[in-house]
Image 1 (cartoon, rainbow, N blue to C red):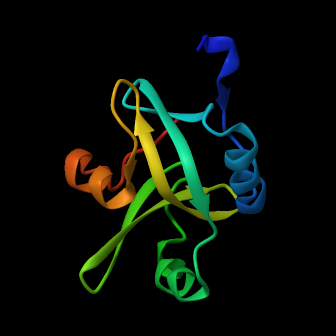
Image 2: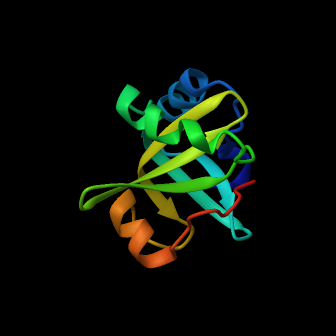
Image 3: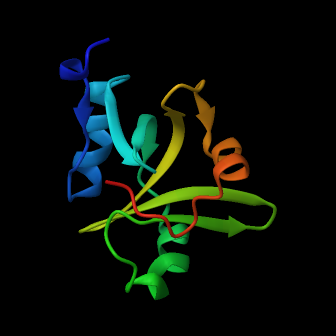
Length: 114
């Protein structure tokens, strides 16, 4: 696949971001640690998740946060106008993985994507 076929996903609204992930699958990506991070599945966080994230208002846009609820961990991305949950991703040169696997391997909490 050529670089011109890939699409940088930089939408401010959570709904637009999720729709772009679906539309560009599997070519939609973000930049993470200087490499492409394909976003294969994303969703809007639940209202319960948003209540937990509410105190995190000061988080800069395009920052990854790990949300811990009980034993599970979720990967969320702060957008300029809200949050999205990243469910399945594929780092450049790696296989696709769920957010839990990505969190375990990359420890991305607090990192900014481009």
